[in-house]
Image (tube, rainbow, N blue to C red):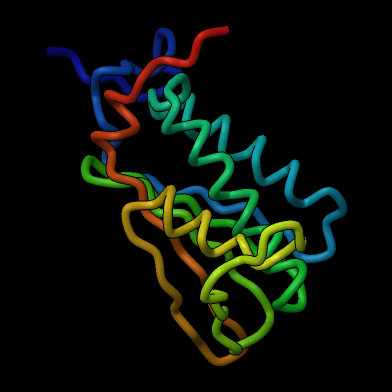
Amino acid sequence: MENREPGADGPPRADLAPRRQRRRLALAGVPGHVAKGRAFTRQALRDWGWGETETSEDTLLLVSELLTNASLHAHGCHELVLTADETALRIEVHDGTTALPVRHPAPRPGIPGGRGLHIVERLSDRWGTHAYESGKAVWAEVEASRLEYGMTVQH
């Protein structure tokens, strides 16, 4: 079986999981950062052969939630990092505070807010945080098998 690099004589093969690849998008001070982060992620998923499943749509929602939470609760988004390998896709959103996110015990019906981390928990296979000197990363992982073999989105 031939294993081609993306862009070499056509698109990457969808039946091959990506070797470890990382893409970074700087977002500090960028207007429309949620839309830009989603577009960046959508393109990465397509490039890696993971672009047309229900799980890829869930992944875009994960990105939106993580970016929105950083914007609302953590002094803004600094960077979006996507790391893919044959086992999982890891989404990291770096922000400007070391304060850890708080998951509300139960969102209240009819009252906005408090659902973001519930959505992240529900759609990801794992999630967590990593603090460092000037901020933190909130991350979520999606198993590659879910991205490869999820139900195809009908257009």
